[in-house]
View 1: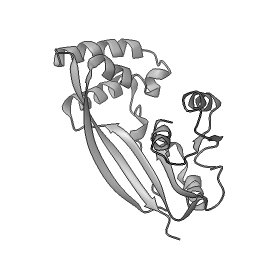
View 2: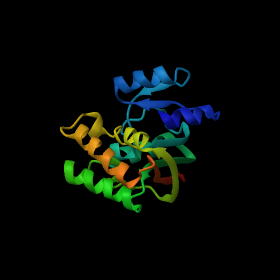
View 3: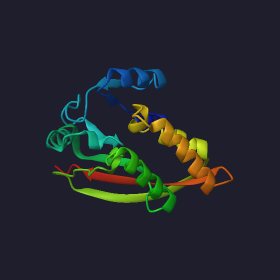
View 4: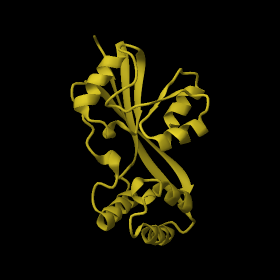
Length: 193
């Protein structure tokens, strides 16, 4: 809902799509002026040819491309666009790569869902990688890390891991601040006919 709210705040006419009741209720609480419909990327609740732009902010990986791609092509007008993006930690930065390796060592591979392959079946995308960074406290960094599902569902050992990671990062960054580096992976496909 973050991207939806930002697009709405900038004047776009938007409709949010949410499959789950809990997240739908939370979205409505935070964004009471934004219309919301129930559905998912495999069954879009929109009329054929009704959309100029369809976005998937950190959510394309949840779809089944054999079903979602035909749905995208169905609901977009000719000349309409599909925009798919994710905001991912930049693992080219040493300390971030180390943190990811420690998480995988402790909890297994695949913990970071956006790292899974994005299917482009049947669509021709133009892609851009947009690096950016922000300076935050170690506590803010770990609070952000703890929003990933691995930590939200409270896998055994996550609290201990976060405490160990706090100590490790404090030793690396004794002033208590880290420079988080990210890469936005933006992909746009046009419906040509």
